[in-house]
Image (cartoon, rainbow, N blue to C red; front, side, top):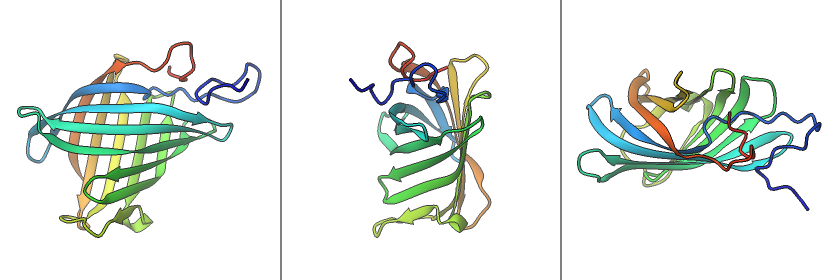
Length: 190
């Protein structure tokens, strides 16, 4: 019988299981910094597959206006964490409902520090705009997810550069895990 994709490798296999502090469902509040708009966020990270070469994690995020509950933003995609010593190289691919895709080829997961960082730039060809995409054109996006010293708070910051301008701190959010990954060590959470 084959082991499920999210199962840890067999004992003594020599395969390193990356500690995935991100795995689970997180909820909290954030602020769109330039305008001071408060929002509620739910983000979910779920392991899809493990191989000796990589771990693939599905990601889904939704935000709502804190006061009205109106939907504000959503994105989904995949985080691919390549095997190796920490910090591990990673790739992040995201899609947005406003007809933009982002590919972060410059990304790292530092399991010891419990930090995931990624950067996408227009110069790297990281953005794909659909025919109905409108508005300002993102030219740099930097994301950072860090587990706070309390071990219970996930801090998320996004820096955004549009139309060639230098990136500015755009979003700050703090969330707590509301749904843990499966028990029994199958998620690799530490």
